[in-house]
Amino acid sequence: MKLNVAVLPGDGVGPEVTREAVRVLRAVSDFCGYDFRFEESPIGGGASVEFGSPYPDQTRERCLASSAVLLGAVGGPQFDSLTDKLRPEAGLLALRHSLGCFANLRPAIAFEPISDCSPLRPERILGANLIIVRELLGGLYFGEPRAIDAASKSAWNTMRYSEQEIERVARVAFKLAEKRRKKLVSVDKANVLETSRLWRRVVTRVAAEFPDVALEHALVDSFAMNVITYPTRYDVVLTENLFGDILSDETAVIAGSLGMLPSASIGGKVDLYEPIHGSAPDIAGKGIANPIGAIGSAAMLLRHTAKLHAEADSIEVAIEAVLKSGMRTADLLPAAERSKAVSTEVMGKRIAECTVEALNSRMAYFAV
Ligand code: NAD
Image (cartoon, rainbow, N blue to C red; front, side):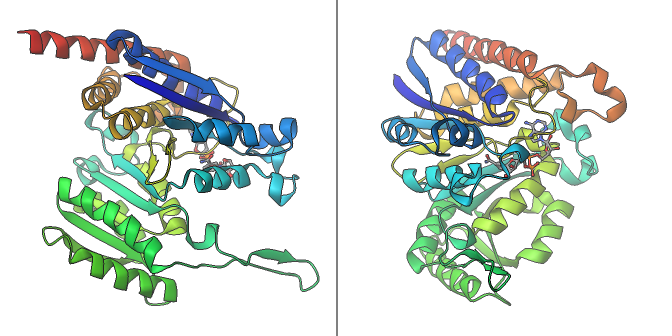
């Protein structure tokens, strides 16, 4: 099995967490005798400063020639004074656009051993296992025209969706729902927005192709309250770009920390994997970021791109085992207990070891 992974560490904690994700992938590759290769390229604010672009041409070429892209995060206050075109986030949008990945899958699971990490009551979250399917290439983030106009002292963005954009992401979500609990909630703001009314019409039409999946429509404002109050009610959540961005950070509370959530962006030329969090400038450079979102993204890479299901499962088993053992990064501990926290590196190394142990016991099981 050969895999060329373009690694884009980015800014802030990005390099710290991707290092651990690559460590775990290397452990899988070494143990299984695979040929995984990793090549780093610049992206984000650092790339703007050094190469004059937040998504340099060489990075784009390398990403498009790879089997998959593993991204850390971009951004930081030190880049706030850059022009709009040089902003790190412009690099992120250009990356997603160039790869063409329009469906962003963001699972949020309340792992039993860390239900105590969430500020939500354990009985509310235990058993929660939902996945947000966020449309990634449309809506307000890409709509034109967009501008800040100094003369009129105003600014505008455009929310635009075509039927085709909605249809293709809806199909991804329904197919996923068919393999899961056959429940899909589509989240919009159809009482106010025309784009949402189109969204609702198209999703309802696509639903007819998936008669086994129960479809529910929800308005984003009350859904934001319901998903955190009754997270176990939901399975697949389909929504547009901006709503998905916000709701997925909210569902991180179910998992205990923003550092826990992985993501996969699929449907284009090359798949993109990244933790859902940003560059966390408040903790960058301290070696304390939680690498589990990035490592979970590596597991998604093995499952979706490489079709290495057993290996992906082994990484997830390892994450759960390490958390069960009580090992925690600082974000998963109350302030008074943070002296017990382990570093990003210690957590990454332990998950890599446990992944190999999980692969080993799997081999032993099948050898019996
Ligand atoms: P953030 O996700 O970076 O951080 C929010 C909070 O979560 C912070 O307190 C941070 O310390 C904590 N956190 C995030 N990741 C963590 C981890 N792995 N371990 C432990 N704690 C973690 O969001 P923000 O502060 O709103 O944004 C900071 C920068 O990141 C901004 O420039 C923003 O544009 C950028 N951003 C980038 C991406 C991306 O690259 N995909 C996504 C969101 C935000």
